Image (cartoon, rainbow, N blue to C red):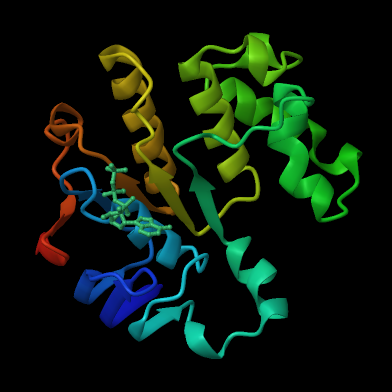
Amino acid sequence: MIRFENVGLRYDMGPEVLRDLTFEIRARSFQFLTGPSGAGKTSLLRMLFLALRPTRGTITVLGRDAATLKRTDLPAIRRRIGVVFQDFRLLDHMTTYENVALPLRVRGKDEASYRQDVIDLIRWVGLGDRLDAPPLVLSGGEKQRAAIARALIDQPDILLADEPTGNVDPPLARRLLRLFMELNRTGTAVVIATHDLALMEQVEARRLVLGDGRLDIYD
Ligand SMILES: Nc1ncnc2c1ncn2[C@@H]1O[C@H](COP(=O)(O)OP(=O)(O)OP(=O)(O)O)[C@@H](O)[C@H]1O
């Protein structure tokens, strides 16, 4: 689904922060991406989302060499990749419902065709009573779940989540993990970047571990 071959990354004239990364995110797979702070988790997620180009190596996304993609090809590919950013990126002037529905609205879909799906998904993440609330009145954990719902509304083939339990207490972190696992059971590949050891210990899952710019894989 997404394949990296000998990928390296440096920012400007700095040292290589990631080197010789060769791995694949397979369809329907579930994995954690981990490593100490500054190891490059966010940088790697940005490359997976085609928001950052590697300085060397090849990234193949959904069968296409990322280096040959045109700017106009990107929206269709990104639509198949859902992302939960570390800082949520919810729009403050919109309600939970409007934030979650936004990717569909941007695509020009008719609201009548998706309204119930959006409401059902918001209920699924446990925010059924926060439909009309703007992000400003949501707690950190509620914002987290609204951001997750928005990443899922267009039924992506792959979900990338950057520290999705970074702002929540352990019981909610466990609930979110169950949510990701349920999503994975329905066919979505999931990549969770985290340094939450307690979270990773709860499931037997593949681990991609970054350290000193390199990646070790534990299947
Ligand atoms: N835009 C940038 N310009 C220059 N250097 C950057 C940039 N973004 C990240 N870096 C550097 O790249 C390295 C990896 O950063 P990255 O944010 O990917 O790590 P991380 O594992 O996600 O860290 P954290 O767990 O603290 O979020 C760090 O040394 C960081 O300083």
